[in-house]
Image (tube, rainbow, N blue to C red; front, side):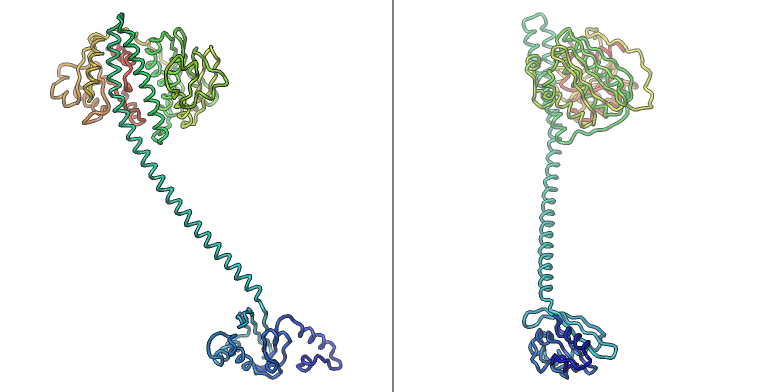
Length: 541
């Protein structure tokens, strides 16, 4: 067989063998057959050519060890003694029925070598030049390594960015908290002197009626009122922007909310000769009681502000499917259809409205923000010269019966006599106490003032004298106004009507006062609202 391979000549009757041997010699990869003693029986042309073996090493009968010694000496088997490397290789392939190894020749070619033992003990050794494949694999591995490095680098960069963002977020949260705390302190400190000023100007206005000073006093009071509105709006917007606005959803009857609106705004409407009708229909809704009240307050305030004397403002609730539509309807100046989208924008004021009432145009912006936070809808229907309807759609609680509708009590007249009404005023600001005493004294009230509970106890103010009403500041030096009211009630041994006066407009304070059933008069105190409260106390007495 070996002669036939070497000479390429076929023996008679061996055409089939000739074809097989021809194909064998033309295989693109090297193949060699060794006998049981590992002597070369035959090898194809590619075996010697691709391994670059001399002709004598591909001759039949050549020992595999001789071939390996030659290759080891050339460096194909790696570093080390050629004899030791050849012996190790022979021992390895003898110990395995098949082997598969990959080596790089000294000529830079990658060879994949396969050995297999036949059933009769011969050894077939073949090899393939896989340089192109190895280079492709190396390129792919390099690409994967590069890609992994890029991914790792991007991951590290993203981690650094996330860490920076987290630090920035923490810094922003801290700044917001600082701003919120600052605003809470600022609102108290800024509104306190404004409160005293408005009380003094109200006293001045009442005492100067019919004189040349009346118009001046009224102008001062109006200017202070405008400052108050602007400051309150700016503080509200800042609280919302800083995240201090917290929504607390609950079920409640909207009737009580509307009744409080009537009590708060009736004096303001009567001062402008505007008819205010509040239809306090009983409906159970799901919303934030305090924030919804703020929305309705802003809408009613705007309605009164932009309605001319002799006009009318109507407030009420109507069932619309699964909602209660809270309407604030006025006969005011109205808004052009093309300008509806402008009125909910900060600092946006329509020309006609700016001529009627001062302001920055923040009220409806606050309404829009609160309604959005509550996830309620708001609707506007308005015609120029005819009036406007602002409607807030509040989710209705189905299946919960509303409380029976009582006969609404007639609101006490603004000019009811307050003579002899005992009022205790507690505030840590002496200027405010002085202004309150002057104003209430002018209305005929008997007034006692104190800056603390300690002063009340030391001077025995409530010994033999029980106030008909306590007007209590919330931020006292030693305790909160709510706790101070509880202490006073324990001292007199029974129920003691009280109202909380505070420049703190936070949701928490309102919730605490509401839970204890204590009404709040926000500072700066509106004399008309204070008088309405005193009238109620006078009627109850």
